[in-house]
Length: 309
Image (cartoon, rainbow, N blue to C red; front, side, top):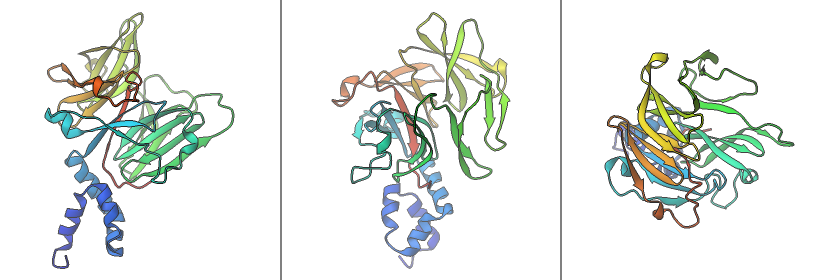
């Protein structure tokens, strides 16, 4: 390897899966230093995004240690999609992890950004960041004692200007239609979708645009609206997707594919927001035994990443 240029070695290493990179840190002190540097971490993340190293996860918020995974390529290529059962994100190889105290209560993945997950727990009130690829976890908020109010977390994202990850936790009240600039840390009014009896209840991303799921009073159908020009109220447009849901679905963008993955009641669909077609991609009979199909209505995705906490 001494005759291979250093930049070529870096390029090769950056294309490897995170688990392999973590093992190769043991090769030498020089490699460990290289692969722990912020420059290499960003390079590896860029390679991961470009090569679509994405994992999609279905889970039950009450049985969160158990999850079902599938990969991006299977979803967008038309190949047979198979679910694989995985262990907890929070258990170490020895079977006990830093989050064993949070196992009793409801868990939710609030958001995913650059390979990091922001998770909330109740009870007790807690917020944690997790890197599923490296197994690293970090508690950023925890409150024990009497649980008088639920934990309200509005969002999780990356502030590129300050190269920092931020969690937005709300203790007071903000407007029902408000947007937060992570860099300036300022709220501003946001034009909400409006209509007779229309109740917006959940935000999504669809094809790079803002999407909102809405119910109409007295109806069981959930309809979806997309803002085609960000910030312009007149650009809200209802799309040809309506779902009968006992619980709000999870909707995840499939990058560079004009499609989204929809998870609801243990069923998975691909919706093409260009031609407005909808097809089921996983037969519920294929879900492994021991998983309650109805409760598998939550989902998230994450990139293979070395980003440290």
